[in-house]
Image (cartoon, rainbow, N blue to C red; front, top):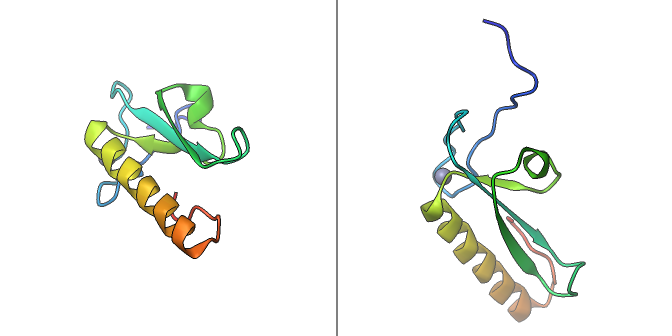
Length: 91
Ligand SMILES: [Zn+2]
C-alpha cells in the first residue's frame, strides 16, 4: 500500500483523545484568533479540507472533544485576564 499524500493524517486535538481521522468521519475544526475582533475568539466550523490544512487549526473528532477544548479555551482566557499576559497557551 502506498501513502496517499492528498490524505494527510489528522489527530484529534481533544484532551486525552488523539484518535486518528478516517476518511468518512465527520469531524470539526476549531481555531482561535485575536486579530479579527481585538479579543480572543474561538471558532468552530464543520470539517473543510482547506481549513483543516491551515496553520493553527485544531482537528476535533466530535462534540465531546469540542466541548473540552472550549472549556480549555475559556480557562485560558480567564487565566490570561488574571495574569494579564494576553497569550493563549495551549490552544
Ligand atoms: Zn477527540
